[in-house]
Length: 83
Image 1 (cartoon, helix red, strand yellow):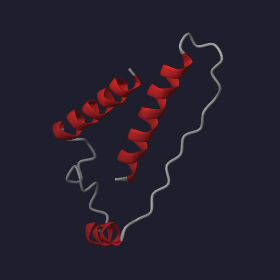
Image 2 (image 1 turned 30 degrees about the vertical axis):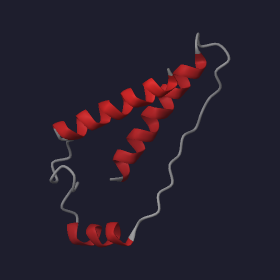
Image 3 (image 1 turned 180 degrees about the horizontal axis):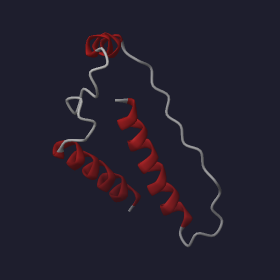
């Protein structure tokens, strides 16, 4: 799950960086980080998974079509907010 959060944070940062940069002049390097605190439920779930792979994808390591659509929708929403 942390990988998914990192992907969202990185992509949103890239969209914001591009939006703020305009023509590309005056952009400064940016470091993006995401700190997550593991909830008890997530910790218990990780113990149950016992290395069986990514829970969201059934261990296949690939995003489902629903996950891809959600990602695209969130990124479009970010772009709308930026106007």
